[in-house]
Length: 79
Image (tube, rainbow, N blue to C red):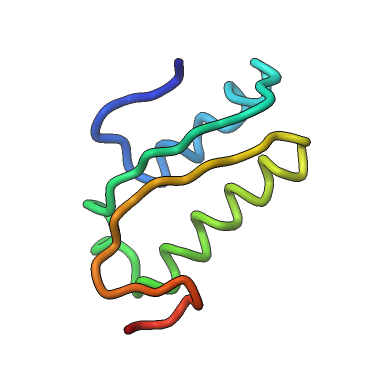
């Protein structure tokens, strides 16, 4: 497992090559939103997260993401 408790989104993204090297069929991401405040907006955070997960999918990996982001809806806009 490449999971590291307390990782930020940027730290997780920095481990992307290590993930790809393992050639997984599925990656599960359980990420807290404690570092969302370091981004200019929730939109910027979500865009970066989805860009990362899209890159894993492009490599043929199925991705499941779990997180809690208060006040955010699936249509990428504030409630």
